Image 1: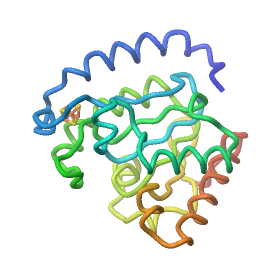
Image 2: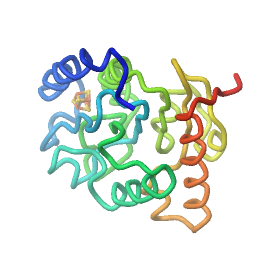
Image 3: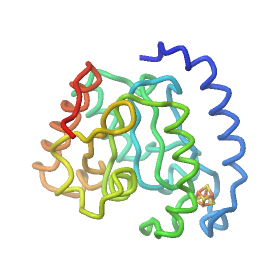
Image 4: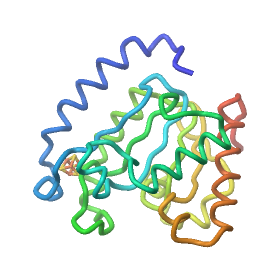
Length: 199
Ligand code: SF4
């Protein structure tokens, strides 16, 4: 990963977008945030994860997936894909914490969309793994829920999109969700190796 010629230009361009995003006031979530949680990882990676929204720890530290959900995600990605966090990029659908960890509202998702779009444009990953309903519905432009949409890969930009559960749902749910999420990560790894998704 990280060997495309565009990588040289991607890093400063992404840093510039991040600098702009850090002062964003496009939606009401700007009022309650401690920090904008833009994203972290290898800007030249072939693999990108997209989650939902920052939680309390993420808001305080300015980094996505640093709480219990993030620890579970890191563990599963290492065990199923053999990758540590420096080998992929990870961001959320909205970059500021919704109060009380409520769901992001449609207007907030729409307002924040251009930041995520810029990230996906610049990183140009071969495989995008969406974590949960919000990222999956947004990027697939599909109103169905994650339980209906997961279990396969979808053609997406230069590669594929693989939907899976948000790790917070796995933490709350039964063991079966964990097994399904692991299967999704194995699927994503196969596409990193060069597979193409059926339309
Ligand atoms: S959630 Fe997104 S659109 Fe809203 S203020 Fe934060 S960065 Fe801007």
